[in-house]
Image 1: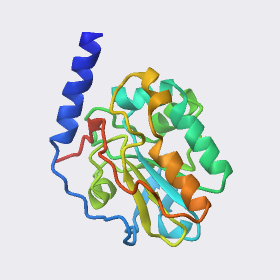
Image 2: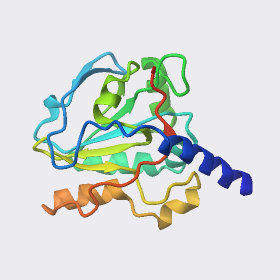
Image 3: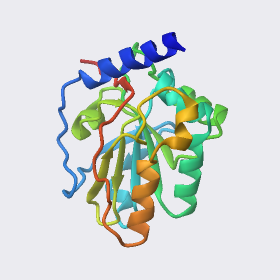
Length: 203
């Protein structure tokens, strides 16, 4: 248990030590991007205007990411959101040769392994989309409303740990934001501290 806690704290320290280079702010227009997905198709944010969009930064080898996928939490949120008409884009900004980097086949294998249901898995090995949004950790989550305005950015939930038992006690910020947007309400928690492993950018 002590080793588990020390691992979590050391990984968190690494993630939180990263420079806050975010170029986006809640309440402002989310910047458009163009990137290839795991099936070789070009994906842009602009093509989904009129729909709520979730951006999820992913690194399959990160213990924090594994927590949410091995428990089924991430897939459940994806499935519920997509069933409700939300576009869910999973993004991998890991550089070639660094931890968590995937090519198209690897990304599709990951999605199949965990029975994930994102709208698309986007490949961003040069980190352009990640740096555009200031994505710092995996996972780092963003919610964009139907008008293209950023309404939430931060952690997926309120408890920064790798322990699956914490899920039931945590406030699920992304799920909460989506429910509030659907109800026509302002997002009550618009920002939170992202947690997880640092995004493995090329530089």
